[in-house]
Image 1 (cartoon, rainbow, N blue to C red):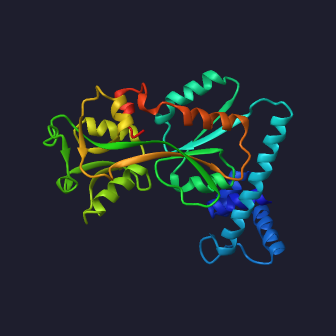
Image 2 (image 1 turned 60 degrees about the horizontal axis):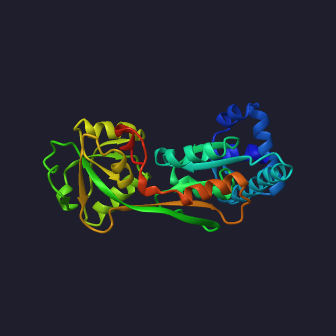
Image 3 (image 1 turned 90 degrees about the horizontal axis):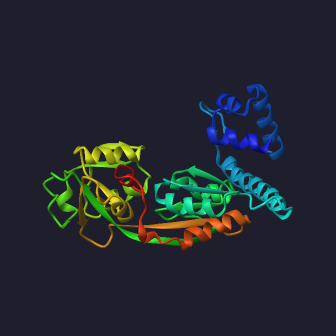
Length: 300
């Protein structure tokens, strides 16, 4: 019943939830009504489209934490019973940054199952508190109580332009000089887009976005094709030293990013998750990676 409630709460649509759960919609509707009856209050507003109400949002948080603890207990028992190191579940906005440490981890622990979840930073805190994942790596702060963190590295973010761009010969550029320039940008919510918007907002400016995409590999290709410019972190710049682009410093102390690893403060981390945390914490991030030029420019 509770897991069915979470699916309905996530989708806010009974028929789609019934399809995902592979149950009949009338049966699912009765299950939700029975749960509301037990609680003595509606969990959804039903005027027009189904919407999770304030009571439903409050209840959802408790259900996620309770089921997360139950799943964590199962994993802890399996680990104690000698079922091995188990599984580690890592979430990140992109995994190109992690190809090096993940490969090293898998070589050192070949029997551990590694689950990778590509996830927006806005969803990470809830996923950690619900114990849907063990670890999250984010290039922007996660604002939530009950989390612990470890800073992995901090780095400069550069402006990448095609080699024949008018700014290409410059060592540095101001944000004011970038007003009106065509930017190839990530979607709203991604750390690069947040940084771009923040840099411009500090100067009462708005960046000119000519392409906004979810495919960061396509963003890199478009920059190299001469269709615009974009922000690229130093780790990716070092990995793509031979890429056909020019690298320009953005003047000011704020054009930087910090990659931080998060986990739930009260959660039981499996041996596999603890080993992953140690691997990422001890990794030499200054050495860069071995991604291709196009791949390395995808925003790390």
